[in-house]
Image 1 (cartoon, rainbow, N blue to C red):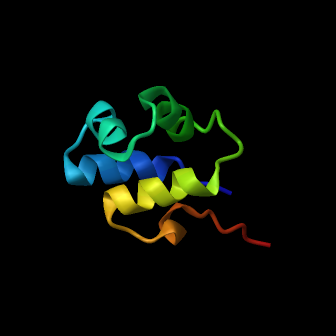
Image 2 (cartoon, rainbow, N blue to C red):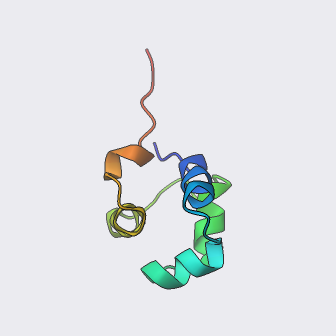
Length: 68
């Protein structure tokens, strides 16, 4: 699963708006908002890669590990 709230956290840490970040990584602003609010159950690998590269973090940062 994808952790959309991590995007919100990283945006706050980097002090950048969704609009500016979306432009920076080439993803639509609305798409990022959908990811943050968990309205997109599926996300493409390329999008996760762009998010990770844009924030300078590993793609694993966005994973939610389900506990058994």
